[in-house]
Image 1 (cartoon, rainbow, N blue to C red):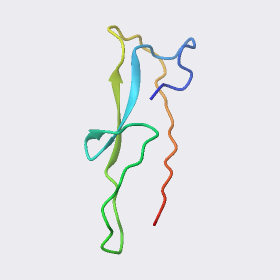
Image 2: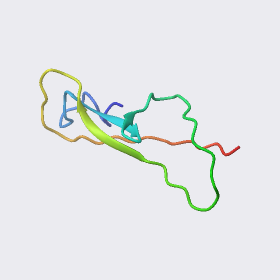
Image 3: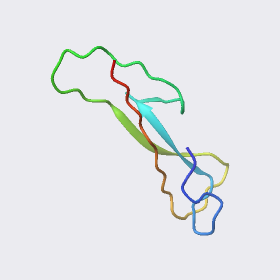
Length: 73
């Protein structure tokens, strides 16, 4: 996932953000089938991490945002 302001002065270069589900990288804009709920409270093991996208990295701001759409069936 691209950084907010990528390519602008002051934004880090050579860095992106990767979303993970249960430690495995997610494919953006794709569906993820979750387990059937046993009822009660559920936890989704979603995390994000920075990752290197170019051979060299330049310091700067490294922010990103994502939208998560949930469909309950």
